[in-house]
Length: 149
Image (cartoon, rainbow, N blue to C red):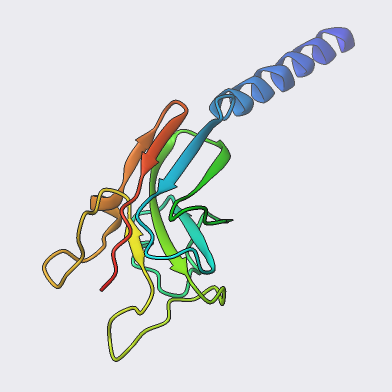
């Protein structure tokens, strides 16, 4: 009887480990590219989000991950690795002075910004996770348009 309990317990442990690891056994990469930067000053900050309501996020406190890319000839790219399947959105900042924040004039950003799935930003087209979101279920590449206001 004691051996049966050990075998049963071992089987349950294996089953539980399989169930938990199966959920995350697929990890994917996301390559994000930005072209058309107005200059090669500073760097590009890439903020990745994975929760509804997380953007806009001017202070970058709701991010899932952040990477910084160098600028070469007005372009930049980074690759986020080991991402579980799901819905994601990307926010980019052409951080010309490398201070890690969105510098503003009176109201509008002085530096270039952009969001996945957005070609323009305005009062009637404000950034929103549901509009910027896209699904990752395989290795993915996207391009984000930089917008200077």
